[in-house]
Image (cartoon, rainbow, N blue to C red; front, side, top):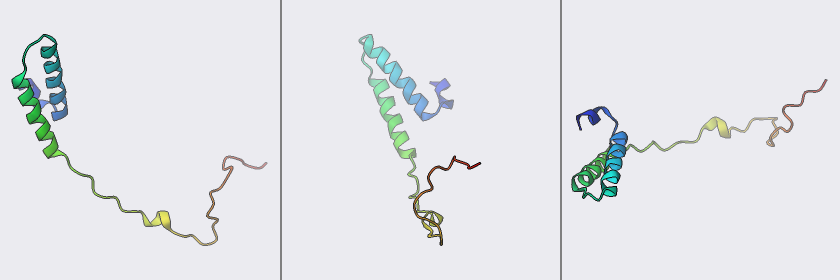
Length: 80
Protein backbone atom coordinates (compact mmCIF):
# COMPACT_ATOMS: atom_id res chain seq x y z
CA UNK A 1 0.00 0.00 0.00
CA UNK A 2 2.99 2.31 0.48
CA UNK A 3 3.60 2.47 -3.26
CA UNK A 4 0.02 3.68 -3.78
CA UNK A 5 0.46 6.79 -1.63
CA UNK A 6 1.90 8.79 -4.52
CA UNK A 7 -0.89 7.74 -6.91
CA UNK A 8 -4.00 9.85 -7.38
CA UNK A 9 -7.23 8.79 -5.69
CA UNK A 10 -8.65 7.68 -9.02
CA UNK A 11 -5.62 5.48 -9.73
CA UNK A 12 -5.74 3.99 -6.23
CA UNK A 13 -9.43 3.21 -6.66
CA UNK A 14 -8.77 1.55 -10.01
CA UNK A 15 -5.98 -0.60 -8.56
CA UNK A 16 -8.12 -1.68 -5.61
CA UNK A 17 -11.11 -2.57 -7.80
CA UNK A 18 -8.83 -4.67 -10.01
CA UNK A 19 -7.48 -6.49 -6.94
CA UNK A 20 -11.04 -7.08 -5.71
CA UNK A 21 -12.11 -8.45 -9.10
CA UNK A 22 -9.09 -10.76 -9.18
CA UNK A 23 -9.85 -12.04 -5.66
CA UNK A 24 -13.54 -12.58 -6.42
CA UNK A 25 -12.63 -14.54 -9.55
CA UNK A 26 -10.53 -16.82 -7.35
CA UNK A 27 -13.44 -17.20 -4.94
CA UNK A 28 -11.88 -15.28 -2.04
CA UNK A 29 -13.88 -12.96 0.24
CA UNK A 30 -12.82 -9.31 0.06
CA UNK A 31 -14.13 -7.44 3.13
CA UNK A 32 -10.94 -5.39 3.63
CA UNK A 33 -10.72 -4.40 -0.02
CA UNK A 34 -14.40 -3.46 -0.01
CA UNK A 35 -13.86 -1.23 3.02
CA UNK A 36 -10.84 0.46 1.42
CA UNK A 37 -12.76 1.05 -1.81
CA UNK A 38 -15.71 2.59 0.06
CA UNK A 39 -13.32 4.82 2.02
CA UNK A 40 -11.63 6.00 -1.20
CA UNK A 41 -14.99 6.68 -2.85
CA UNK A 42 -15.95 8.80 0.15
CA UNK A 43 -12.68 10.74 -0.11
CA UNK A 44 -13.24 11.32 -3.81
CA UNK A 45 -16.75 12.66 -3.14
CA UNK A 46 -15.46 15.08 -0.53
CA UNK A 47 -12.76 16.44 -2.84
CA UNK A 48 -15.11 17.09 -5.76
CA UNK A 49 -15.46 20.76 -6.53
CA UNK A 50 -18.38 22.16 -8.45
CA UNK A 51 -17.54 24.45 -11.33
CA UNK A 52 -18.80 28.00 -10.93
CA UNK A 53 -21.95 28.81 -12.86
CA UNK A 54 -21.06 30.30 -16.20
CA UNK A 55 -22.37 33.74 -17.01
CA UNK A 56 -23.19 34.71 -20.56
CA UNK A 57 -20.72 36.81 -22.47
CA UNK A 58 -22.06 40.28 -23.27
CA UNK A 59 -20.10 40.49 -26.51
CA UNK A 60 -21.84 37.36 -27.77
CA UNK A 61 -25.22 39.08 -27.58
CA UNK A 62 -24.21 42.54 -28.76
CA UNK A 63 -26.39 43.95 -31.51
CA UNK A 64 -24.04 45.46 -34.06
CA UNK A 65 -25.41 48.24 -36.27
CA UNK A 66 -25.59 47.78 -40.06
CA UNK A 67 -24.75 44.06 -39.82
CA UNK A 68 -27.00 41.31 -41.15
CA UNK A 69 -28.21 38.96 -38.40
CA UNK A 70 -28.15 35.97 -40.74
CA UNK A 71 -24.82 34.15 -40.95
CA UNK A 72 -22.63 34.69 -43.98
CA UNK A 73 -22.85 31.90 -46.53
CA UNK A 74 -20.03 30.66 -48.77
CA UNK A 75 -17.15 32.10 -46.80
CA UNK A 76 -14.48 30.14 -48.67
CA UNK A 77 -15.43 31.52 -52.10
CA UNK A 78 -13.19 34.30 -53.41
CA UNK A 79 -14.00 36.01 -56.73
CA UNK A 80 -11.27 36.37 -59.37
